[in-house]
Every structure is written in C-alpha cells, then in structure tokens.
Amino acid sequence: MKTIFQTAWPLRDNLFVHHPRERTKIPPGTTCSGFQITRIRGFCVLLSLLCSCLVASAQDQGALIINPTVGVLGLTPPIPISIEGFSGEALSVLEFDLYVQGFSIVPSDQAQYHIRGSDEGNVVGRLSLSSRELFSRSYTGQTIRREAHAFADDVVQAVTGKRGIGQTKIAFKAEEPGGSGEVYVADFDGHNAQAVTADGSIVAAPAWVPGRFALLYTSYKLGNPDIFYSDLSTGQRRVFAAYGGLNTSAAVSPDGRRVAMVLSRSGDPNIWVCNIDGSGLRQLTHTHADDSCPCWSPDGRWICYATKIHSRRRLAKISADGGEPEALSTSGTPDPTEPDWSPDGKWIAFCSQSGDYFNICVMRADGSGEAVVLVSGEHPSWSPNSRTLVYNDLIHYRPVLSVLDVFTKQHKNAHNVTGEDSEAAWEK
Amino acid sequence: MMKNFNYRITLAIALAAALAATGCVHRPYGVTPIPHRPTEVADQNPYGTMIQQEPPVQPGPGVGTQPLPEPPAPAGDVLDHTALAAYSIHFSFDSAVIRDSEKAKLQQVAAALNADPTMNLMIEGNCDERGTEEYNRSLGERRAEAAREALVGMGIDSNRIHTISYGKDKPVDTGHDESAWSQNRRDDFAVMHPKPGA
Image 1 (cartoon, chains in turn orange, yellow):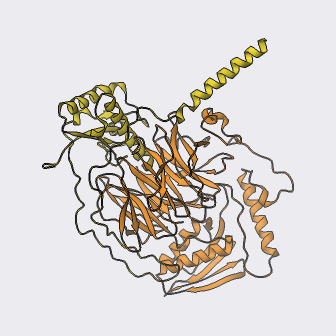
Image 2: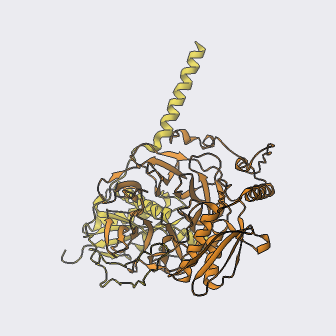
Image 3: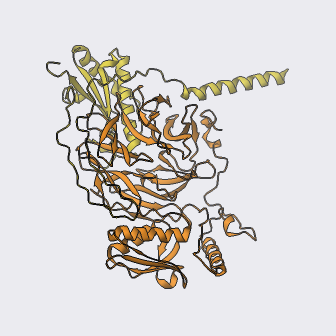
C-alpha cells in the first residue's frame, strides 16, 4: 500500500514501466484471451478474426455470444457490422449507438454481423451472423429514436452479452457566453435534452443520485457556489450544502447513501463526506492544496480525487471512512485531473494536460501498467457498460459533448444544446 | 565500529527524509476557517423543472418546463467592485502562491479595510481558460483563500473576509493567448457594505 511518503520519489511508483515502443514476441500456442500484451495491430486483427471465425463455425444453434476480450485500450479492433433498410433518424441512431459501443459500420460484404429492417411507422429489425438469423423483433409505441435505441441495445446484447447503453441518460451543463448556464438531462447521445434549471446563473458539476431519479449540482443562484438536490420526478429542489466558501463537485456513492464533495469551509478546498440526508459531515482531506473532483470506487470503499503533491498535480485515493491518502501513479500522463472510476471497478478515466489542452486517459484502477492516452478532451464520465465515456472535446476553446469507446478509440460528437456543453455525468 | 557509525548516519538521514517527505500531510498552518454565511440560504423558489423519467421501451409523455415564478432573493450585502479594482492580484499558471510583486497591492487592500472598519471584503478567485472546470473552480478558491490568509497575516480580522471562486467562468480578457490568460489568473477584491438599515 503506497503512502504519500513512499511516492515522494515518483520514479519508483510504477513497478510495471512499459516503454511505449516495446514489442513483445507472441509465444507459440497463445490463444485469443492471452494476447493483451501485444501492440502489433495487424496481428491483433488477424488473430481476433481467426478466433471469431473458429467459434462461429462451431455453433449449431441459438444466439452466438462473443464476449470481447478484456480489451486492449485504444487498440481493440471494432466488430464489423452492416446496416440495411433504415434511413433518417433510425439509421443515425443505429450508427451512433453501435459505433460508440465498439462496432464499425461497413458494407455487407465486409461485415461479420448484418442488420436488416425498416423504420416505416415503427422499427422492425433483425440481426444475423453470416447467414444465420439471431433474432427478429418489432418495436412499437415509441418515437422512432427510442425504438431504434432499443433495437441497438438488443444487437449489442446479442453480440457481446452485455447490456447496451442506448436508453441511458446523461446530465450536463450548457453554458451561454458570460458564464451563466443551465443543467440539462438528455439521452446519452445528447438528444431530447430538457432543462433542469432556469435560473440564469452559473452552474456546474451535475451528479446523479443512484437509486433515485435525482441530481446534485452546483449553482451560484444564491450568490455563492452551493450544492442543490433536485428531485427530477417532482421538480422539487432544496439546498444540499451551502457552507461558507466553495461547495461543489458533489459525487454520490454507488449505493446512493453518501455524498463526497469539495468544501472550502475549513479554509482550503478539501474533500468532505456526508450522508445523503446531509448528516454526518466529516472532513476527509486536510491538504493546504486545491483538492478537487472526488469520485467513488464501485464498492464504495474509496474516493479518488485530484490534488497537488509538492505543487504537482496528482491523483490520489483515500478511504471513504478517512485515513491517509495514497498517491496514484499516472506515469507518462502528467498533470492528471477529473478522475472517474468505472462501474466494474477495473479502470479510472481521467484527463492529463498536453500543452494548452487535455487528453482523456484511462489507467487500471489497481495501478498496474501504464495509463493510455486516448483522445483530446476533458471531464470523462463512464457509462454503465464500463467501456463508453461521455466527455467534452474542446473545439476552438469551446466545449462540445462527445462519446468515446475506450477499447476501439472510436468517438463521435453528441448532440449539443448551446454549443458550449460540458461536465456531463452518465446515469449509472 | 565504523560500520555501526555508518549505519546510524544512514538511519538518521532516512528518518530526516521521512519527516521531510511527510510534511505535506501535516495539518496546514496559517489557515483560517471561512466564516459562516450571514445571509439566509433557504431557497425561495424550490420548484424547478419536472423531468419525466422514461422507463425502457415505453412511450414517454411530453414534459413542459415550469419556469421559476420570481427572481432569486438578493444577497444581504451590496458588492462594490470599483473601489479596489486597481489592486487585483495576478498568479502564475496553475499556482495559488502570492508572488512578491503582488504584496504591495495586498497591503493597499489591508489599508482600505483598516481605514473603514464597517466594510467587509469579498475576494473573487479566477483562473485562465486552460485547466479543467472543477479543477479550476478549486484552484480559484485556493487563490482567493491565499489572499485571505495573507490579509489575516497583515492583521485583518478573518471574519471580515469572504471568498468566492468563479473558476474560469469570468475572464476579463477573452483572448486565447498568454497575454489574455495572465490577466485572467487573478483575485479581484470587492467591498461589501452592509445593506442600509441592517
């Protein structure tokens, strides 16, 4: 267990330093599941196609479920799929949903899986693997977009064995010039956005309350950055934290019972924790630095956050019950901020400064290996599938919400409300 | 004997290094807690927008926005940004350390506070546009608090000084170069006069 003391010599943090250009020979007889160590892209593609062909030909009945390999960050080849018979919104929904969950949309003769169907009146769709039909369904009673999202989810479920994210939601802020903005809730692709606030004041850091249809967010509505609790079902809201100084960056534990946040009431911005009803407030960190961005481990035991150690930006984690903070190593990706812990516990996404911009990076939550730089952007938030991130790209210094698959590195801009949308949080 | 002597020296150096390295987890010195908020913080307008939660694969009815019926309650004190506008202090990139060159301006602010014991101070901490949003909100707060600590060190009562961070939300120069950014990395000082009749 590392302590701040041990990480005073940062070069010794990472016991698994990999030179980025290292090539590792594949030992003979290695199977698909064992080749995570390779960085030879062509060999990856060949081996995975070979394996999936072998598995496909061995099937005789029922839906084929291929669980993707644990995944090489940024280098996993996408699953090729073709789409026929759809147009307009249904087509754009299918293309977007599948792309950001690790599929590539290709012509039929290059595809491993095939989607056919229609969207006249309602969405009807079927999925095939080569010539074998896996399922055929009709989706009714919805908007075309929602039906298409439901179909995309069924495709993802059939191919990967995991739930699709097509019907999940994000919360984010949309800013006007001058700094004021409002909090919105939308489909994960940014469509169907609805305003949660109408105050015309500065807002920040929306966070979902697991188990409830509710948000915590920061607003300057009362003349100071305070944290509000909004029940989205009823529209009611109340002040959650309005101590002297800064109240921001609320993050709710995965069991919905505790809230970590940044308060500066002690004289410095530090991490504090309280119960969801506001009771039991306790200060966790006591640094004379600017702590920020707390996030919870999925088991609720740890809080990871950004801090400064010896004036350098670092990520650290601390037990949610208090104790000594431990610095996390993000060697090769300097000046990390804005961590988010994946729901399956395996990864921590964060951003790392590169010149005047930031890159979205992902590291293993256990600290092994090197963090991987993925794309330019800020404020990553994991989807429930632990592979897709919502974040904001920066285009001419203006934030644009985007969605990224960390294994294939495929990403696309979401639909933005004002063109200055940022700080998205994915409902888990 | 020489071996024992070397061992003790090594141990002593290691202990000294350990003490030095753990210095950063000491309780910070020179930090004064933020005074309790004097204004009433109950939200006058508790009703926001109702969002209809759509269950999976079921139609969701349309939702109308319910605008807030009144403007929010004003803060208790009046903020004057002009009186001390000349004394805004600036910071180096990613830093909340008060540079020596800025200390003379802080002394002017302290002198103004000493000259009028009825007025209080709001320190507004700001950042340039680089840097992520939540990080910048904390850094701006740390910058405001650094100035507050310095003023307390000059003898000003800590209860007279409030802080607020605007992160990167309120640049004075919207350019995208160092000359703009250096202007935006700042603390602004606003005078708080008590509301008449208070």
